[in-house]
Image (cartoon, rainbow, N blue to C red; front, side, top):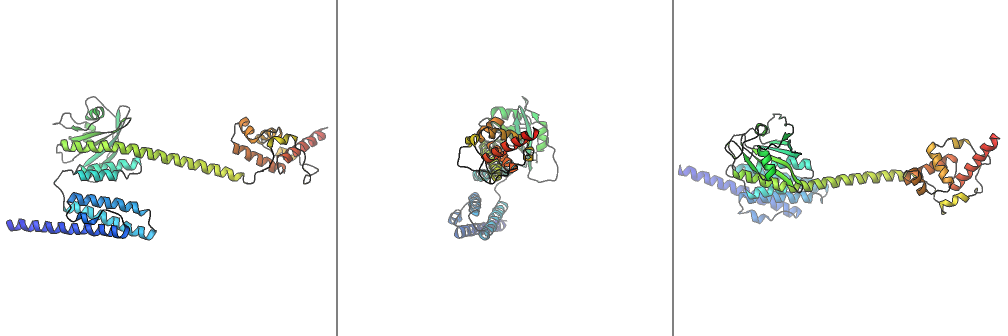
Length: 387
């Protein structure tokens, strides 16, 4: 028996050394080739948690460096990132820590990964997965709190079963529920038949356990959500799990505020780009607009330009003007500027320019003065014809 135990210890030591060398080798590659990542010398006598944290740090540094590389080096670094993640999974599998014990380094690594979420939806999904693996829970449910109700939005199961779970509708935060206590006290609550408060039937059904923890997600304006966690084995949860889930909920509140702000900034940026593109399209329509080195108001005293005018003006051109164009042209003839016309007709300055350009084209005029002269000539022609 003693020899067997010594053999197992020797095998574990050999496996530990092999994994340690693998970590050092990958970190060496990352620093020597790309100049980023933690120093590999610190991993030679490092603990399991320290190695996994260093691999997380190396992965984060590698992702940051990706944007600065050419396509060929970016592809090579991508393969190295995959190797880093594979080694991390191997360490976790071959050297598991005692069951259901959460490490502070694991928690810190999970929060660092949560900071990388780029949207509210992405943060919601990532939060469920990180809570499950860090707190050693089988099922996680994320809910929204609004107007005295809580509504399940996300569900995560470590078992990854094919079952399709129907999320319940909005449930009231009743006075006797664990959810209401978490919402009211802004602290994590341990629910169960042997705990201070019993489980909610709906939550117990979703979590496949009558023992679960529920923690509030709090921001500056109040509680916006709840995080539920359970183990489907049916075992009762303890205060340690409650505290871990509570810590995740508190940290995620700040992250949700930051990501929400980033989402809104992206929406505003997109809207601004759309408006600029619209302005650019309208400006293209004015590319050949009439430009003159005179005051627009001077058109009221304009005289016919010499040369280039037909002696017999085409009076049908007046009929080709639309109702809006006639309104604009009437104001032009009175000497109104584009700004005055825009204010009078309650339209944009660019729309006025577009109308003026179309009027000049239809009347065959080069500028406003010529257009007014043609208008007068056409009007006189019509009047003399009617007499």
